Figure (cartoon, rainbow, N blue to C red):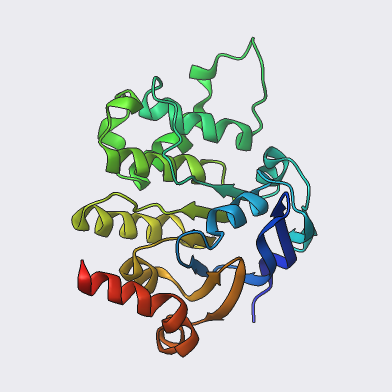
Amino acid sequence: MSACALQLIDLHKSFGATPIIRGVNLDVHQGERHAIIGPNGAGKSTLFHLISGRFPVTTGQVKLNQEDVTGLAPYLINRRGLSRSFQVTNIFPRLTVFENIRCGVLWSLGYRYSFWHMIERAQDARERTEAILEQINLGSRRSVPAALLSYAEQRALEIGITIAGGAGVIMLDEPTAGMSRSETEHAVALIRKVSEGKTLVIVEHDMSVVFDLADRISVLVYGQVIATDTPAKIRANAAVQEAYLGSASAEAEHA
């Protein structure tokens, strides 16, 4: 079995007297695509915030490539090889598509805050940015302000920003939310392409996306992981069906 890219050890998070994450233990293997599913209010986004350092952990540990990163600032966790997207599209709307991606590329190539560097002359940054634009199928939109992109294009751009720094662990929070079926299919193909050779952790409500993409799935219910297994075994798990998949199917039937 491959080494752990991400490890959560007895992770807890409370807001005041209210526990949200209640003792999560989870190993995500290097190179796997791991989905986290669960009903609304299960704590999925909170878990992402804990892993990426946006929220402080109440108790427990977060390890990234065997290094304890619990309590580190988000930018320090990012520099250690973890990058994430958000539920709500998080881009620079006034910058062009090219400039958005280049912002994510610069630090990973060793460029730091400087008033005397002519960034337009940074050929390595330009080449890497162009390569990512082609990878996310936005090469033809490189000069367009990000605010003018369609919703699906903005989500693709955010995925591009997420991978721009070259992180080995990529976390995507509901990347297909609000998309049509055809847009979702394109997004899944994009995610599969950009996560090749990397570790992917994805929170997603669309079960067709989850079962199509994931090597393993963890089910989070009321802040606890009740099962982690392959898609086929998760689908057949009676406890999962009762806690989540069954109720999801029932809602779909009555929609």
